[in-house]
Length: 336
Image 1 (tube, one colour):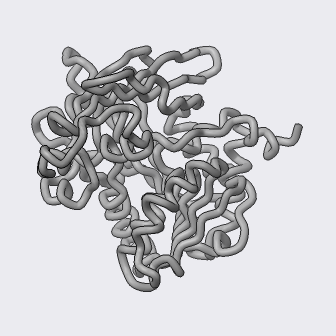
Image 2 (cartoon, one colour):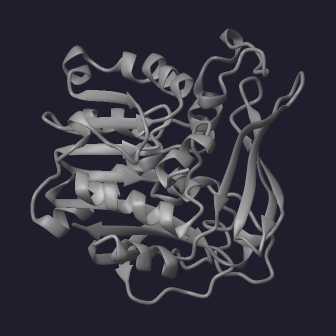
């Protein structure tokens, strides 16, 4: 079977983000502290809180008009986004960093493994003239995003976004010649061999404009290899629920790990394995080497700063030296 055909055997429901990874915010480098799940929005400044959809907005809604949240009246993609998604903060970094690299604003963006295309939608809302393409294999997830996100755009914004149900190894149409490609939330770790990963990176490089930039995220550290589970309460009394990040299995011989997301409710059954991800846990060294092999230049790592209390501050700065933390997160930019 050709490498590109193998992707059809490894489909991901939705996507997972930097937000879920243990100790990346609360106790990044404290050896004696317990692991804790993080939320990307919460690692950024207080000002960003109000820009992110999320559970901290739910308690402000009138309780008397809201039914108690249960699995039966919930959408798992909505639960996920309320718990961990913050496209605004992610695009702040991408938009600012591209301008620093190229001296101009990016206009055309492609979001690979886009899931519900929340980020692709946010991009066209960011500035008039911005265009976006969201690419994902999963038709039902794209349909969910069309209903919940694209439908809320203005008519003019809708003209500037395209969703494609196709293989990211074979971009086409408006997905060619873009300024920026995003493969965030570790989605690209679905490629579990060097051959497939290089094939993907080469496909991205070929599809970028001549001054295009690929942006990735990455996590690692000792805690990322552990088989652990943690719960985090999201929202208020009636509409709240518990988000569970479950690092279920890791095989050190192959580097393959399986993670689940579960949701638990005040009433009724839990939503077990609402999302499951089977990835290879790639090291930063490996990813940088594979990007170079694919022809990318100026491969830069951006490390999260410390807030002085052992937590990440949500500010990522380029570096040539990381920290030997139990858990870390980083962004990567790679130039064509």
